[in-house]
Image (cartoon, rainbow, N blue to C red; front, side, top):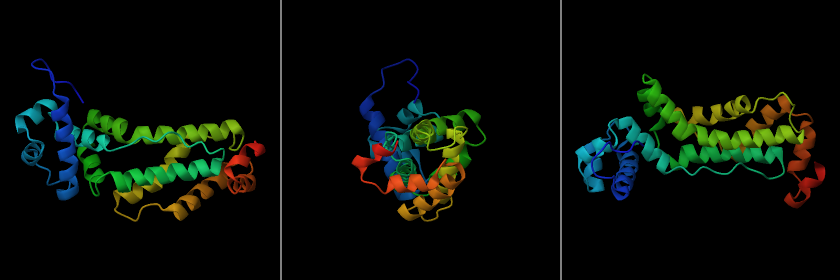
Length: 212
């Protein structure tokens, strides 16, 4: 978020209260009904104070959503199939459990006409999770589990597209079974030896390093 221009320094306690109130109201009322007056009342501040901090309503919502995200470390189980399965499940958890339901789609639509806002949304809400998954894919390439010409960013886009589609259209989240099916479908196309990856994924964690 942008610091206030001039004047008194920003009070972090007010910032935190506003973000918490915004998330709570998004869960209760949804994106379309979010009113700054309600946010201000719940946060114990004024609408003017919120406007000074977040001149654009969309940035307030983006920052509020980012405040409840926990960026996981890149999965590293010594098992490509396991790492990718975990990456998909972590992304599904973020979209379906941490973010208020029904908010992401209208927010994306609301930011689409402003390139700067759109980029800010991607940088704040999408890129952190994608980066962790991309690390897992690069490790798989380096281990020789995936073909050397696999593009990690494109591979992650393919994995994430199913998870985001379900979140944006209000469908059932990707569970453990559908995550495995998705990962296996892609691995069959890019794995050097898919059957070997399945074999490794079924070994105890302490033995997986023996197969690399």
